[in-house]
Length: 387
Ligand code: PLP
Ligand code: TYF
Image (cartoon, rainbow, N blue to C red):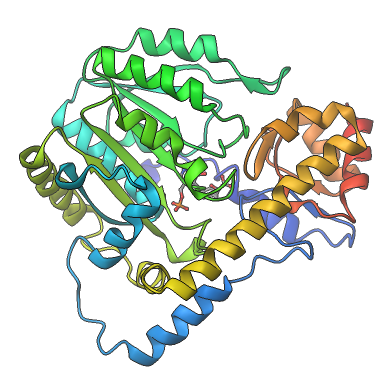
């Protein structure tokens, strides 16, 4: 039966993990997969997470099923982190999902069910998993340029022009902060313009928030969500806790929906439950349960916020160091989060790997958190010599 299958390419980001691991050179630099790293190159479990996990181990009395929504306390505790003071209350629906990926897939399936003819507008470049996730649901994708590699900034005119061609019931997939793979985010004023177009044209925002707290701060990083919600009756937000709680392999996320009214939210909710039931039935518990323990405990929540802030500060200081060492990297100081995309060809990326043991995906994306005070200068020299 499997003879009928064709070989598929590996995940361009995850395949860097194995290539880096098998390189024996001690000076090697891993700027591949998007995980946070400390100055010593580790991706530690958050202090608050360790404490929450210990508490769970001691107090959890059962592992009996929770149901398709997962941990409802987790979902409720995350609401204020996401919406701040602007929670749309009875218009909100949603559930815990296996990572932001699960939330994205569920969101796309919901749109495909509600409006099979909807087109999804996606700026390029984007996270390489966005197109295949959307493709699985059969929705048509319309791409436009989000980022200009030369200026290292958002092509805002092209974004606006594209959204002006979207029709009622079409979808705009927008990354809220720490754009993957470019770090080029919308400023508040740009979000206001985007929100007005979405509202005026009846376009449904599908907001991908996978790095809240790693850009400028928890509230600042959610500004796009809050600004858009002022202008539109309905929205979907795919939320990942895998970076900002350091949960990664625990696959922790949530889908938040906002409907025009409470009745709309109830009906939409029953539909996401039905889709989830046919996909994963119920999400994995551990990460969400531990995140709930943190968010419900003021001391743990404060420590989580503090550790997240120190991670954010490290990313910002690495960006500043790059700009100080070489003015060619100055535009990267205006970007946010872990990622930037350098204007490198696949051949140059290969040379960096073979000649300098610098690892990144073919796209030229770098994980800024993979840089340290010790390796940033050799990294800059290596990039200069292949350019
Ligand atoms: N969206 C973006 C932009 C991402 O970079 C990621 C990264 O993993 C995700 C969604 C999915 O997150 P998760 O690992 O929680 O599935
Ligand atoms: O872009 C990244 O590196 C992160 C991690 O299939 C990731 O978002 C990469 C690939 C993938 C899942 C997560």
